[in-house]
Length: 194
Image 1 (tube, rainbow, N blue to C red):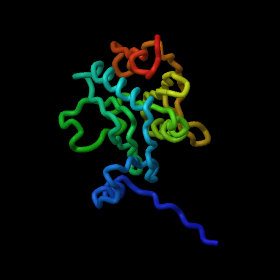
Image 2 (spheres, rainbow, N blue to C red):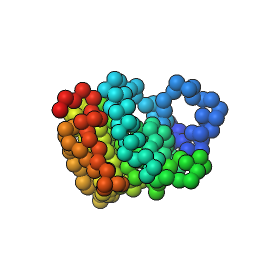
Image 3 (cartoon, helix red, strand yellow):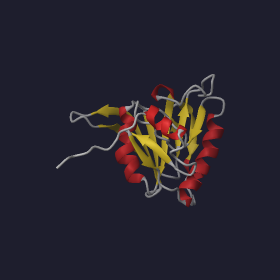
């Protein structure tokens, strides 16, 4: 029996496929650890939460940071995920010369309903391995915000975060990158009557 391996792509190869129009404009894919992963379709709660969060974060971070929504970030030579939000440092070229990398990232945010397992088991360790200091997960299944900080590597070679907090949707939370700014979660979670 002959075993075959799946092809793992680098970011350069992934971009070349895009240049060759291998993907259509309707394809929603991202590169994770060399694999081209099809992104899940967004349901109404995800879309509503994303719109609410875009409005709130844009007002909070204006002129202090760059807010990117569902845009690529570069974490390693074979990982270019597209988190729902990335708050990144301002750069003179507004990232025209390249996507943000871990040294640019102040906060990563994912919104999860059908993607909860993927965001916890695949993206969380990926972000921790890249040294992303703060990762937020808007958990639409449990209607809470999960915040993760202090990335670590355990003795078995697994990456994770040593600090996890649960924040209820009727609370406010301070942005870790700007301690003088807080986000009112009641304005973000869809369908929450406080």
